[in-house]
Image 1: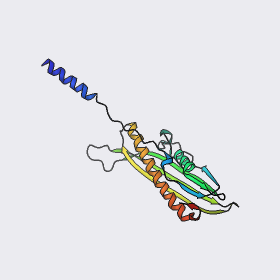
Image 2: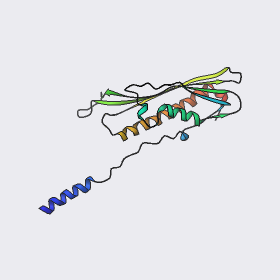
Image 3: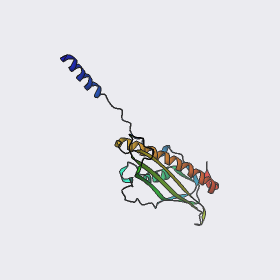
Image 4: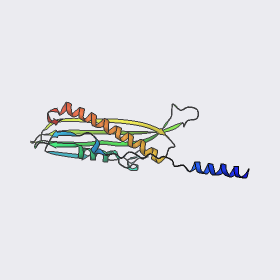
Amino acid sequence: MYLKNNFIIILFIVLSCQPVEILKPTEIDTSKFKTISINAKNIEINKKYNSIFSQNNIEEEIQKSPIELMMEWHGKNIIKIGNENKLVINILDASISKNEIENVDAKKYEEKTIFKYEISFLVEYELYDTSGFLTANTTVETFRSTTSQKYISLNEIEIIISDLLISTMKDYINETKNQLSIYMSDYLSF
């Protein structure tokens, strides 16, 4: 009986010490996103968005904020070709927020409140000729959101935010290509 009890205790300890697989958040590498080539001698990127400090704004809590991601993508992936024109890129919004909302679809034993994460991008593109006259412009806006349970690990939160950022960036880049091909097609190189 004594050996049987010790065996059960040892078996319980061994089984509870098994390693747990922890998924790491995806590293966001903007060089892997699509590029856009435009006939411009100069590209000017203006960060007109200022982070709003509030309880819901989580830009300071994440590894790479949306504004850093936007600045990096525009700096690396908008390629200038030619020796005339000036492209001005005004980043007006690159925000991410986390709000506690009621879980309207909650079943009997599920959490009654959940978190909703929202990312919003708003960017203005202006193309000026060598004389400084505006020849073409467009505005690109994207928005995406997702939800999570209220009580999850920090690692799970990072994974959710990374996935949301990547998906929103892909949406934004596709919409940018679409808008630029409509309003600046004469200046693009595919």
